[in-house]
Amino acid sequence: MTTSILSTGRMLDDDGRPQRTGTVWSACAHIITTAIGVGVLSLAWAMAQLGWVAGSLLFLFISATSLFTATLLEDCYRSPDPVTGRRNYTYMEVVKSYLGGTMYKFCGFILYTDLVAVSVGYSITAAKSMLAIQKSICRQRSGGASSCRFSNIPHGLGFGIVQVVLSQIPNFHKLAWLSKLAALMSFGYASIAIGLSIEKIISGPEGKTSLSGLHQAPSEKVWSIFTAAGDIALSYVFTVTVIEIQDTLKSSPPENKVMKKATKIGVMVMTILFILCGTLGYAAFGDEKVPENLMAGFLSQKAFWIVDLANVFVVVHLVGAFQVFSQPVYRLIEVWAARRWPKSGFVTKETAVSFGRVKFDVNMLRLSCRTGFVLLTTVIATALPFFSDMLALLGAIGFWPLTIYFPLQLHIAQKKIQRASLRWFGLQLLSVVCFLISVAAACGAVHGVHKGLKVNRPFQFKE
Picture 1: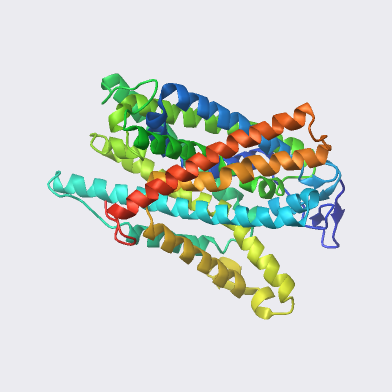
Picture 2: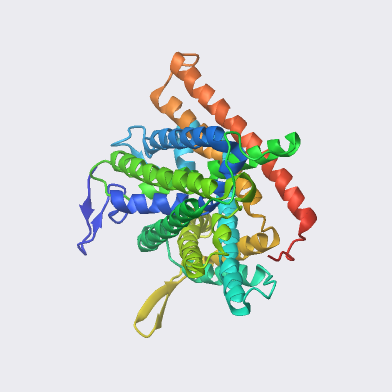
């Protein structure tokens, strides 16, 4: 791997692009921002459905499996050699290099469907957190006399407006500051949830826990278990942006080694936070009273401002996380347009704009397509704000194909693992087990969304 210098003194990487400056810590920030967010506050509810035994085992299994498959994917950033080969800038390009055109198209469909779906999930969660803050303020002002029921729509629209502005950040390389801020916010609200759970356990938990979880009618129990599995799977969706994150790293040391280190640190941190939030939240509320969103269970406590602060942290974190997931979508549209209409001023022209000392470039394609994307996700999020069921559905859509199947198939192709060998059978068995988890999660999520539509009509949800 080599670098070159332009006549202006600007350093270039071996592919002729501006020299990348990412480090293990910036990669960690991106990973943590991607993973800790939508799912972490639903994990106590998931534990209540599964119980101590199944819940703990599923946490450890998905964590270990996601770490394993992510490291396999990271070896495929360059091809054919993981250190000196040609760069693949996106997940889709990796699949095309190793698995061919048909799998490339299938991967693209699943990948970008998942990215859009997760962006919708972040919009839902941000609106729910803002709604919780509004309800808390209402309760304090009315002394509990008011029912304090509000629509989620204004909050969803407000989040969308902020994203329209931030979406003008040109590319993934300019997001490091936002990811670092978002990562700090995730530690903040996760720590608050853990601390409040411990305080409730010490003062006296609200209910009892059990080895097998909440007792329900057999049919409802099955659906709840499926949904809980999807919630946990969603907590490890960072794999879908691994290649884009890896493409921000310096060329030396080799990107795959740095990325593996960042992934190990990130997964260790997120797993500790996930298990603490899930188990302590479950212990605090028990089988019967654990809420879908853990922070909602602390609204009646005297230290209401702490809960409000945690929800502020959630919103700020999701502002950054939305950008991490949406940037690959923006890049796909803009690269395609540039190739299709290379001489169009609408597509390629950058117009300098300044407000006082603030200067930036505006591109009409970037402005229009990114605004349209934010509008689409906002409309869907305000129409279907069913928290845990939507989270489970998002987890089911992307977990098996993107986190498990493609990394395993890429590894088999890269290492030329012989078909029907012992290692090949082991990898296929792992894929089948995770496929069954995804199918179960999808079934539970669809069932939950169907029930939600019976209670709330689209665009008329109040809480």
